[in-house]
Image (tube, rainbow, N blue to C red):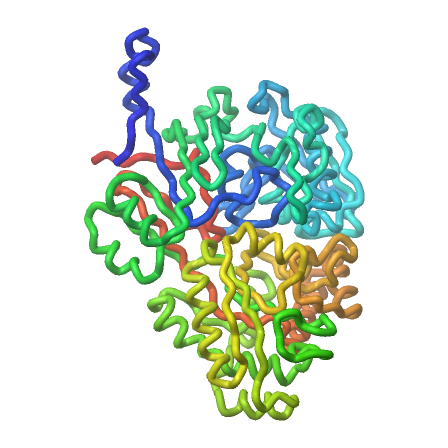
Length: 530
């Protein structure tokens, strides 16, 4: 059921016409978890981005077919100097507080997003300087010709410089501590929806922006958006079936077939630009959660190979994901530049060979370890981790599963304090450099490696990753990407499991197409006639 916005006082005052009421629609939107913060540069987490895209805007966004689409930037080009990109900005745009949007806000936001505590800073690691040429023109100088710099901006939200400085949000929230800033729970964007209220882990209400620049360009039929984090999959599905919510993401794989048969619902599906994988702490001298003292069993390549051979990806697809996953051996979906079918091939599970490798490594009786996993972020994430623990138990690696909300999990990975963990990664740039910048490069060096919690460090690989942001020859760049992947696959500090398949469930009148990035922009949503 779609709730109508029926304000009796407004009706009595004659302030709402019948035509306005016919178009006024509230959508109650359910997901498995709440954003960890409203600070748009604090976390590099898809759950945050999806909600923030309703309130804030970026210079560009990506369409479902992978093309960059103008948003706050109307055009962009590489100048005669190939290390300088120029962006022309949209005129007559205002922030929600009425402040005009200008090039100064873009320069401020890019510099803020490069701050010490910003998890998105790797997106801007090639940026040397951003400057306002005039009120509606920004130039960004990079460290050499960066062919894909605009692709890095699809989740780089633009904030008001004036508002940020006035509200104690000039710098990014420190996510490694419990410190908050003025942007943690409040927001002031240029987007189609204005933050009306927020109750963390309960409800976030957004209202249609009456001064939105996109009036007449987008349907804007959703006039109120209520975001409801419902952790329990069963409860989330029940809320959809009872009419308590109108649109739901994060549909459990085990419920999809049943929901497809329900005429009260519409189910849309498609492959997601997201890989689910295991991260292994290969760099620590000793693991915190293991009974092995004085050394790190995960540092041994044979142990890592044994772990991979123990895991039956096809069984996970069949029993845990109910057929709704794409098993893979590489943490790069097929959409991504640098994807190779050879890398995506994965070995058949072989417990006997895995046991042999463990014995050769000096662990004939295995060892103990803790596998950290989120329990509210990915499809059946805790169940996947439990299945992995079962497979490892067969070869003597006694694995305790420690499940926690994604908010806690993300902070833990920021601190890099997990021995063994399950995680997921999407690639909004559609280029392997995004994976390397965040997950492979040495942590904290050259503003990269923010999500590399494996403690893997390779100076040669780092140098190759750095070269990707300044290589103007595409063939050479692609060859370097292949070389990096060859090393990553050989080292096995990540073990890919599968790519997700997305399912959206809604009442029939709402038709929200699946985007590979799991992205949503409710300003595009139209209601179909009954």
